[in-house]
Amino acid sequence: MDVNDIVAERIEQARQRAAAEKRRREELAAARRRGLRARHAAKLNRQARNQR
Image (cartoon, rainbow, N blue to C red):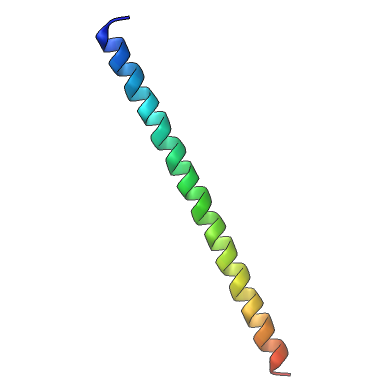
């Protein structure tokens, strides 16, 4: 293994870590959106029940 192979391997590892971190951020954002939608729906349902 020469230096170029080692550098290429490290670059690929960094690329994979960055891709994994991006997926994790996207999954967290999606969960956050689902949670906000659920909270909003619950709030609207609660308001509708209280107006009766």
